[in-house]
Length: 112
Length: 114
Image 1 (tube, rainbow over the protein chains, first blue to last red):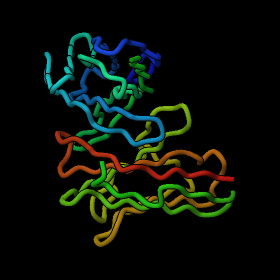
Image 2: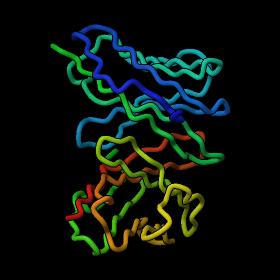
Image 3: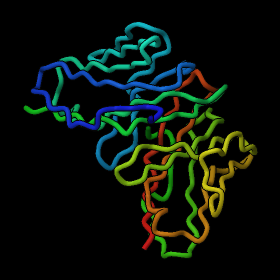
């Protein structure tokens, strides 16, 4: 079992729809979780971080964390073609420092 | 994040040569991380450094790879006697503190071994 699992996609949604990206992790002791966006050939860009159970909203993005189910999700409202990218879920395995374990990413395609 | 500077952006090396990748963290950041992204694979942690100290190198291959973050100057990831399997994108990230602050990535160095 991979430490961080994501569906590779592609996830196709029409412009204006809600895109829902999911991630599960295996280490129950994980405390901090991150979503990065990566355009093809570019570097990962931090979108959201979440540390507590529940929802965290930032603009069109909402991260959801359920530690009991070991599940993290990212919702993108009013999806735009410019949101088309690979979304990487990352879990911190470091103690006192950032040692991120990444999923392989979900490719999102937003069609006009 | 434009604040983390990596150079060169692209590097081509012949098998057996050495590759040196440089990373200057964001201003005020004293923690540097190196990750590798192989084609069609996820990002993999390699090493975590603070100034003059290697804190965690559990993701570094046992041979040919080394990293440093001197008191002055950028962090260096050094790959000796490169092989084709070393071809990948190498990303550096930095953060100001430890676990509870986010890490920001540089633009990466794309190493091609021919």
